[in-house]
Image 1: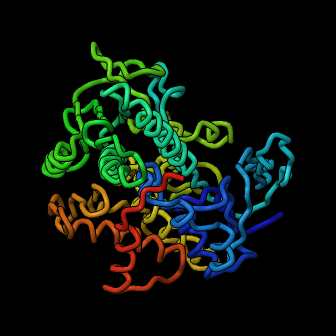
Image 2: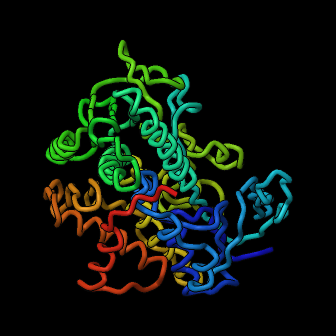
Length: 433
């Protein structure tokens, strides 16, 4: 199997790159490799976990996207790389049942250009019990695991309520970044609807007890203080307990220990940090201390011809000497930069005369289906605007629409399209089956 351009990883950046190149160059030139069969916009995973978004309604099939955008899709995980021969190995796929029957064999794929866009995974910072007793929202299966676990715990609490007045569900979220904050808000909004699905004895604010732990002095620490303060107020309005300036020291099956305090927990989410996937260190490519692939200003892996990296797994240093942050907008921008790079190569034109430069357009944080807060960056250095409420929510939704446009090639624009999208996303769905 051979392709001119092979992209490993169908996240926001990798998929957008595959779709945009596929529409220009065709399936004989562009191939996407991923270990899953469908894509979901990662910022939506907290909604899947809370049960307010059906992953089967929102997920996009890679095979469908490949057909519509004219690239080739290969199903399987990347296992190994022979950079000198320009060959990568894709692992076998089994049926996943008790028999474990192999449905796709291990394969080798040749390439002229390779782009590694495998994202990130959780960094537990050596906290005892973190890997064994927490759920991280890195992929759809993690979000589904959280949702099903929460459903079982709610059912058990409902059964216990008649004999134990304090029966409920204790949820602890570790990490006050965007993922942790959005999940806490979405869970509270979802728990308000649970009664209509048969949990008659449970009261959301009393019996679904949500605690958010953050090591920094404030939540959403990288964002302006006004955004952080507004987010804190919204969480407290929703009866979410927020504890800042605290460090988790251990986690077990019954609770989370932070200093001298033990927080009871039946379900724990780890949203306190990310790192590059460990397998990157086995590929024979240069990596930095964090495990990310070491790339230059053109996103090419240093010292290796024809191999590039983008997104969370790439250690790209900007003109200010700082690493480009692991954010969806960075991956989107990197994908656009590489589209230009490869199209110039295809046309025999000289390479771009400027390196990739990350541009921060601000941040938006979702607080359920009707509210968002955030900051928008202005054209002048250091200038930003605080936004909240319905306007911020509309902006948050527009980001999702822009991603759909990138991977689908077209999207209905205008007020009607946004209205339809909002109706779909604000219907009080709580998926419990």
